[in-house]
Amino acid sequence: MKDVLTSKFIKEMCLTTANMYRLGWDERNGGNISYLLDEKEVAEYLDLNKVIREIPIGFEAKELAGKIFLVTGTGKYFKNVTDDPENNLGIVRIKADGKTAELLWGYKDGGKFTSEFPAHMMSHIARLKADPKNRVVMHCHPTYLLAMNFVHELEDRAFTRSLWQMCTECIVVFPDGVGVLPWMLCGTNEIGVATASKMKDYRVVVWGLHGVYGAGKDMDETFGLIETVEKAAQVYMLTAHLPRKNTITDENLVTIANHFKVNYRKDFID
Ligand code: 13P
Ligand code: ZN
Image 1 (cartoon, rainbow, N blue to C red):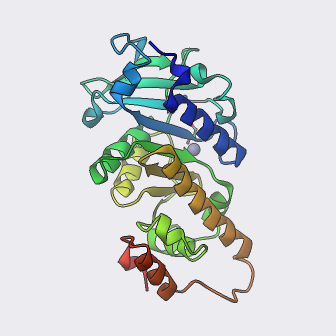
Image 2 (image 1 turned 60 degrees about the horizontal axis):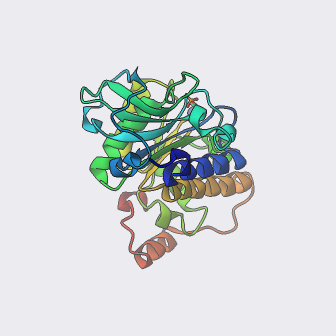
């Protein structure tokens, strides 16, 4: 059996968490990632019959029974993942009852998956229905996007439009727009249900006055999605208080969306 630390999926997780920390999106233990793994690939590194311990999930995720996820640990710092993956990450398989996770590797110090596990698993369920290729759900606290939450109305259409207008290619990267939730208590099943409900239509969900969720088919795509949203929020915050001399018009948005043949939210255009 090969050493799991040499696997592509652990390397990707280390690289991504390090990049997110470097960009200031994940202070302290802020942020969490879940990555749906391919069973055959995991079997090259781990004995799938060897369960280290069982961890209750706190809700039912029957749709994900048998699926294996690499997930960041609760209370763990993204800045430390690369130096100690086995303590800061875990590989879990959802049991047939949907209520329990079987730990196959990691959380070595007795820890467990992120407190946002409900939002992650419920988002995976929603996104897999929308796109069977979806594998990654990512949460973090990007600085400018968070700042924008304090000065912009928290509503899907208005928020999406403001972001689209900040960089020409935003509408190409997230043509489906951005869903926005009001402030809610994090780490609960309720915020998980609300996030998953938005994830039916959006791959980006803003958690009002908290942070953002992104979903995608792989690490790069999901990271790039959040990176693009954060860039737009940065431009917004750098210009919001200044007189606007120029703007990307709705006509411009339609022109670029048509050129790149993306299926954008038509009802978000005036
Ligand atoms: P965890 O440390 O449990 O992953 O929580 C971090 C976080 O960002 C909560 O929203
Ligand atoms: Zn958070």
